[in-house]
Amino acid sequence: MTDVNVPSSLDGVEPVQSVRTPIRMEYTFTPGVAAQTYLREFGNKKILGNVSPIDGAILVPPRGADPRHGALCEEFVEMPHTGHIGSYCVTNVPIPGRDLDLPYISAWIFLDGADVGFLNLVAECPPEECRIGMRVEAVWKPDEEIGMTAENILYWKPSGGPDIPFAEAGVRGWHARKQGETNA
Amino acid sequence: MRKVAIVAAASRQEEKMLDTEVEMMIPLISEVKAKTGLDQTEIGFTCSGSSDFLAGQAFSFVMTLDAVGPVPPISESHVEMDGAWALYETWVKFQMGIIDTALVYSYGKPSPGSLQDVLSTQLDPYYVAPLWPDAHAVAGLQARTLLEQGIINVDQLADCAVRAGTVESREEYFSQPMLSDPLRKADCPTYADGGVAMILAAEGKAEELCEKPAWITGIDHRIDVHHFGVRDFTTVPSARIAAEKAGVHDGPIDIAELHAAYTTHDLLLRKEMGLPETPNHSQRSYPIKADTLMASGLLRIAEAARAIWEGDANRALAHATAGPLLQQNLICVLSGEDT
Image (cartoon, rainbow over all chains, first blue to last red; front, side):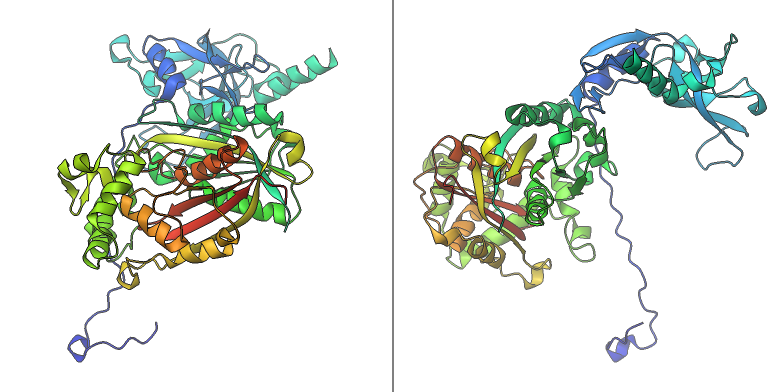
């Protein structure tokens, strides 16, 4: 530490090593046009996607933009409550603030017809049975607890039926389809 | 020095927008791309300015890239500054000779939070910020010094307010109660949500994209000391030096777009830059009437460019400021002449 000349009255006084200046700021967010439309319908147990004006890709959840092209998305489409797992992760270590039984599965869920996925939990499925391409369906909260919040869906559970082939699952599926279009 | 011009600009300001930053910026960015016929793959560099403290979330600028379209991946940068400084970074890239076109944008949405509190957080974190002085109070400290030293008088403040349009007459000005004594409401800014987007291009390309490119003939930015205790509130040496370095005095200025959020700042800046207190051409818009933190400075440059495109000016000055009490100042001189 650099030598500092202080008055002799401060001799032997413990130096200040840190100061605390708490900052608190409050914000009232507006979700924007797309998220607002999405959340309203999510509160009615409907899942909406945005349709890209550039190539018709279906983006879930809708953000009002096709981020690949910087294009405004104003068209919405209602999505089914079934899809497949594009990728997943099994968590064995508890995370502060998350009250989940271990191990739990976080997955990238692709709704049927959607071109992008989103993060959600998968349950009612032993981790060793979880796999890319596995078909899943939404498990909603009880109707009286549904609101305009991302927490409406408790988790996704296996819905049976044949898996989506690995090469067509998740974002790989999107690229595979694109490739197909180019070759067509 | 490589010649660089502003070839397209788009902007929007509203008191309170319900759009997200992405929804707000897409139409503006699309507009400047459409005006120039460039798509994102033809733009050499993209640079933006914004503040996480306004958005209330970390790395908020990354989200706003949704409005740009970074597929395939683009060369991009961001400054936690007014967009005028994003333009400066871009101008340096042009001088390096590695780009011929660029997209610059900036935006601010103060409406979700308290801008007075946000502005407090930029102050000295040990001795000043913990006291939470609001921006008007800090401006009041400066105004008091200026008035009591006789450097400006209240009639000048009133005339400046009339010129900027925050009041219609001196009588109306003096009828207003004090807001942050000695400042009245008419001396202080009204805040707005908004954004600006523009396209820049180098000589050889600019003429293809725009009938009358607004050439940057000089640009410079300087910073004054952060600590209030050693600042002389009655002078703005950073603005004076930046103006000299940007070549403000090398010719007549037809229009000066000043980023003055307070009447006191308008008067001080004019004094430091040797501009007439009663200009022949009024500004196209006044930050004191609609101040968008992070975008007001870039908007001044956009307005100066518009003055050139529309033939209102041959030589225009744009000024941007950041930090408390005109701490940092950027001056940009634009010319319609292909010199």
